[in-house]
Image (cartoon, rainbow, N blue to C red; front, top):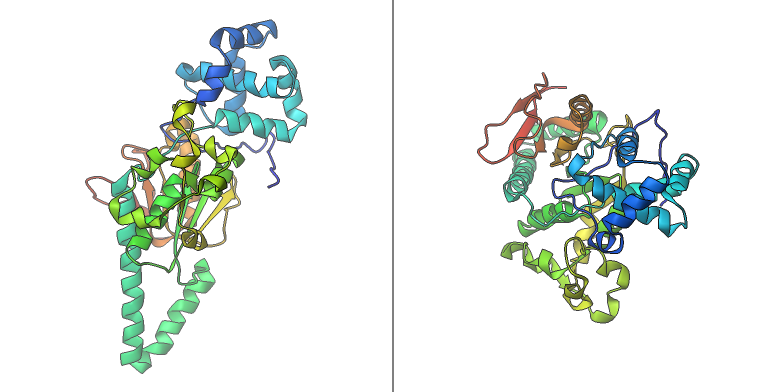
Length: 355
């Protein structure tokens, strides 16, 4: 996939969650002493790189994670035979190199069914959507005079929000796909089929992992029993070295073997797609409005004015009557005129009430 990395005139937003951690292999191979030495020798300090990352992707890296940033810089530089200072001067003219650095900085860990109440809420919304459509169809059969009204309703939706009858869900900052596939499994477990899920992220590396949909044994244990039928074990001769690195964050290499790998059921892949997208850009990732937009554990890493801009864009992509789901306690300052907060004991959810 070709990667277009914008210059500072158009800030890129990195999508991360609140379990962002350094790559364990990266930490093992680059010691704090050696990384700091490289930074010092090149007269470039971590704060300077910290400002660079915020300028490029809007991500405010906490001071406690500066060592992680240093490791990512040093690892990227050494992979190209560069010093940190030479890397600094190469970045403005090498989009591939800049994407490589961003992928290292944005390496993060997610997990299946990370916040189950949110996934249960999405599933219930999808069930209600199906029920309403079936009810409308039944009414049209019983009352032929209502067929024309039903067709008019569908046509109006097609014209205004490109609605093709599918229950559409957008997983923003999908990372390596665990949240996206969790939603797909949950909906499929209720025998739902008229849905489409889009996962987006700024990390090309993460999206490759999400599309492959192969994970390790410790992720399988997080999946509810009702969704276990959507797990297919991978034969040892079909697992590859690349997939074996997908879940090494905070896991010793010796515990990650090909025998532990499994894949999301292939038939679910028809309902899920992934796309490289920067949420702060005006251009949405799809022309379709969404019935549900789930954006959890991402906003906390951005300054408040950026959070407002991101939320405004999400609201534009949400269909009237649809929902935006945030992480509990996230963006409590938000008071949009066209949205109302739903009283839910476990889910931070907003419903769009008007355009």
